[in-house]
Structures are given as structure tokens and as C-alpha cells.
Length: 210
Image (cartoon, rainbow, N blue to C red; front, side, top):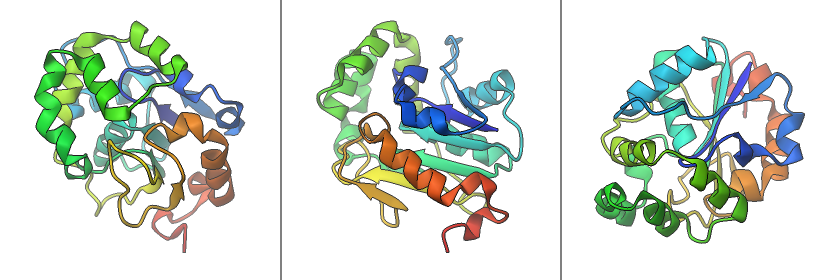
């Protein structure tokens, strides 16, 4: 089974482009109603329990969704982990945002707009429906999260070369002429790459691209 996690302040509508829905056996998840979780570990545990994510599944995540996906991979032996404009540790996040993130406690929506630049109308609609307490908590939690255990799981990384939130990491598997929201703006290219490499069908995910 493939589980797809949205970015911060977003929901399943982040993946409304038809290309994403060509992936077989896929569930597009929303963030659960915030119950005071204040760590990436806590929200990862809740997603595992409520979505029914199991060892051997594949997790795809954008931005915060990829970070939570990394923590899920720390806790379960996933078949594959796909990061779409996301980070495998807090050290990969823009240094400017790391310095400014305490401001998110005061105005999280403005902080995210500053982070990502001009937001598409669809994403603005999602923000209207999002939970401010969840956004505030996750803005803080990201910068205290220790990161992905790379000895346990090597992710597939799809990234935009113009990403200002998480600058292009070395060794990305697919680099697109995109920004932080490539899951929305370049959905067809992302899905074409995944369908070509089919990481969830590989027998050894560490050798899948060799």
C-alpha cells in the first residue's frame, strides 16, 4: 500500500492533479485533528495508528509530510520512502528559516508564506481549513527532530532546484525546475519518475536506482 502525506497546512487536495491518482493502491491522507502533539515522533505514531501504516508499505511525503514519513521509516521497516521537496534532517532546512522559526508561534500562516513565497490559490484554501495549533506545534517540532536513520532507510528524493525552504540537497534522485511546491506544480513529472522506477516494486530498495 502507498500512503501519501501532505505538507504543513495542506491536506489531500495537495495531490489533486490527475497524475497522482494513476498510482495504484494509494491513499492520500489528511492530518488528524490536533490533540496537543508537539513532536514529529508523536504525530508519526498517530499517523501509523490511525491510517494503518504497516511495515512493507510505501510512504510518499511533501515538506512536513516527508519529515513525518522519515520518522515513520525510523519506526517501521518501509518498502520505500519518497521525499518530495522534503528534508531528511532539520539541518537541511534553510538557515534563515531556522533563525526565524520562533515567529511561527505568533503568525504561522505568514511564516509559511514567507517560507514558500507566493502560494497557489488551492493551497491558500487549504490553509483556511488548517489547524493553527497544529501548524505552530509542527513549526517548533521540526527543529528539534533528530532526522532519518539513514542506516535503516535510504529515501528517494524528488526536489526543486529553486526550493527556498529546503535548498536542493546533494544526490537528489530527480531535480526539477521547480520550487518547494513541486508536488503541485510538477505533479506529472514526479509521478512519471516514480512510475518509471517503481520503488515499491523493487526487491531491494537500496539498489533500486543502480
